[in-house]
Length: 358
View 1 (spheres, rainbow, N blue to C red):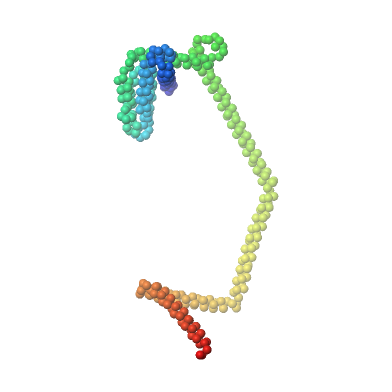
View 2: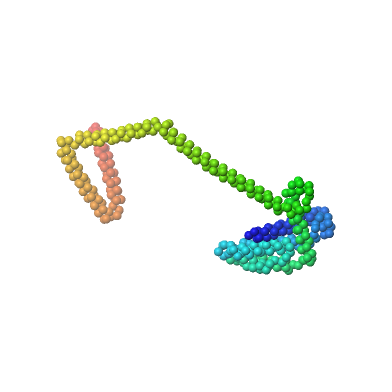
């Protein structure tokens, strides 16, 4: 893991420097266009470029192709939706090889052809029919440089080395104290790892001390919390035992009195019920009540028989004619009208009888 991490950091540093070189070149081209500089030699001399424009353009082209190929290779998802370990290993190898080949111009490894077979949901990884291997083959291998490979690689390596060295020197100067600056020792870059290691150890010691302080504060907080819980328990007990003691006693007495009063009222109601029953059912009234009950039972039976007979006749009439209900309502209306007409005739006759004879 440490070796893999170191290789990744080295490749990432080279890649960042390559991107920085391309950005500096693009900025220099913009400045040259504004200043009216068209000659490549004049651009290199006036703008401080350490390599020819062809080197930067070739580097930019290879970076674009490598990034596009890397984008086509990701993500490596199998048919079941999971990323397999062998695909992850292959992807890491291809990422390092693509970064190395981009920064130094070395041909990409042969594993690139296998990356084109990586599946995204079961389909070969491609975009509009383009696979990473096909993209690298058509854009880099079949597009030769306008200069020799050595002429492209050597200036590129020198400039990347110069940029990294200058950054390391700046980083070393940031950690050099006044005594080191006064002596101006040439081994400042060599002492940088030792200084970084010392600073890391000091930071780790500070972190350990802070962690111990945090643990101590947590323990003290737990102790204080336990003490506060005990104090709160004592206060609750004091409030219940002293301040609310009389209130509790009064509530208990009030509850007991209310319960007894309810029981007394219930006993009074039962006594009144018994008195009412005693006054109602006297020796003189009991035979009469028996007779009344007998008459009521007989009347109920007669009413039930009459009701049953009426229901039976109604069903018979309905069975004879389905429109019996309508006919019965019409008959009832006619009877009411006839009664009203008879009453009217009777009143007219009475009025005529009261008139004097002419």
